[in-house]
Image (tube, rainbow, N blue to C red; front, side, top):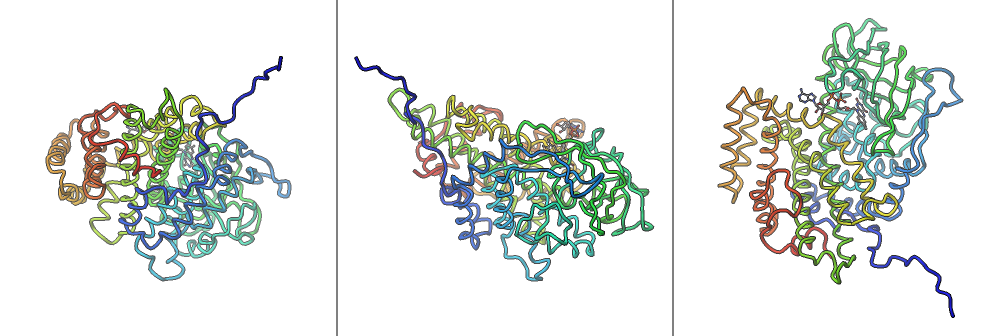
Amino acid sequence: MDQVTPQTPKNLNQSPPFADINLYETDLVLQGCAVREGAAHAEDELRAFGAITGSAENLARGARANTRLPVLERDTAHEGIGNGIVVYDPSYHELMAISMKAGLHCSTWQQLVSGVAPKPGAHVARAAAFFMAAQMEAGHCCPVTMTHAGVAVLQRQPEILDAWLPKILARKYDPAFAPVADKSAVTLGMGMTEMQGGTDVRANLTRAEPLEGGGPGTLYSISGHKYFMSAPMSDAFLVLAQAPGGLSCFLMPRFLPDGTPNAIDFVTLKDKLGNRSNASSEVEFHDAQGWLIGREGRGVRTIVGMVTLTRLDCAVSSAGLMRFALADAIHHCRHRAVFGKKLVEQPMMARVLAHMALHSEAATMLAMRLARSYDGVQDEKEAAFRRLMTPVIKYWVCKTAPNFAYEAMECLGGIGYVEDASPLARLYREVPVNAIWEGSGNVMCLDVLRVLKRLPESVELVLGEFADAPGGERRVRAQLGQFKDLVSRPETLEGNGRVLAGLLADLAIATLMVTNAPANVADAYLSARDAAADDALFGSVELTGDPAGILERALPE
Ligand SMILES: Cc1cc2nc3c(=O)[nH]c(=O)nc-3n(C[C@H](O)[C@H](O)[C@H](O)COP(=O)(O)OP(=O)(O)OC[C@H]3O[C@@H](n4cnc5c(N)ncnc54)[C@H](O)[C@@H]3O)c2cc1C
């Protein structure tokens, strides 16, 4: 009798890998946002970048960069403090090269050297590309966003900006541990958080003493400790330290002008839940040198320009990660059959996926609308939107992403939980960080309250945009009434921070949906939001219309 050898079947009833997909062409929602918010001129580049970021080769690089982790070593060519280097897997450098070639670290600043005004929609075009870069791999986006945002701080010290800008704007990534003059391009990091005070930076203990008499643009000697400083291979860091005149902001280079390493001593790299391709260090400064940016005592005010831009990127990146999770889940459910029918045809799964598609569309719309407000700096309404809605949208999009990622993972069943079978396990570990860093949830809501108290006229401008939206009158009127009632009660205002931020997010989504989404999508979204509590599980509400139509829009077959 023939012997039967047991064998594991190959890909039996499993979905093919979700790779070699154009992340722009397959995303109708992103396309709609990019065009509507002002980046129609960039569509060819976005389409090309969509193919790069969705290629199997680059998605595999993303996976590899998160398993072959960065390690801290000493550079033997240099002696003493300051010779710590981070050694990365080549895949990480390849991802950096891709995103920097696309200009994600600099594209909105090009006019600072050319003098030519940027095309309208520069921030939107960059945000659409960043949305896709995060899907390719999110960890490397940390130095990319910090470099981009750091320029906003350097603008406060024009002679230092002039010295650094050409290498910041360069697009040929250079990972060498070398002085800036010897490098084709540079990246920037940021050191604010200390052990005793992260959010509360005023508790910072790191000290700065003037070396050249003190004052903007002069050198200081900086000593102390930072509990978190990501992307330690960066060429310079924007650092907060206590100068004689109070908490101040400094640009601390890795190499001093004489070509020797600055006294920046990396103590350890953090062992993190996710975001593992990106190194995050604990670091000591031993009389390290840095130039004062802006005036002494104005450190928070100076560095806030950077944090505002990185908050935008947190929202864009979380929306991108939700999009990837959704598309992978729909893709899987279109291939996997259970009980004789494709999962996507099972009514309950179709409901879950459709509900997620609505949420993903809302997140994408919010992030891209926010990006537009950064393009309209001179416009009073856009400035008001940017100031009030940056913390609102960072809060809502980033905080809703972890549960979303979890649900997408479950759509894949057991293999969704397996690191080498599906990217969703890694994505699930990645997403919480966007809610935590650059201002955690409550801190974002405190910032919203600050605007409500100090800039009532800006708030009115934004509320006016919501009230003017067609179609949503009854709901919008009710929510505006609730919002104003809560704001009028100072004794409970702070406790209601999350309620108010949630209401503003909800009003913004309703406005964007009724104005821009197809009627079936807007109706389904609004009816689901009317029916559900804020923390409703996906699929646990009735949806109007046909889920199949929503899914076809979410990921055309
Ligand atoms: C992976 C990673 C990388 C990082 N990289 C960097 C970096 O490169 N540079 C850098 O400077 N920092 C970095 N950080 C630090 C990060 O920005 C901070 O951890 C974050 O801002 C939160 O600050 P904290 O840890 O001090 O928490 P805390 O300030 O102690 O806050 C703890 C919790 O309390 C809440 N909270 C705080 N104040 C209030 C209040 N008044 N009312 C109600 N709730 C409140 C917060 O929302 C939070 O949930 C990184 C962090 C991580 C996880």
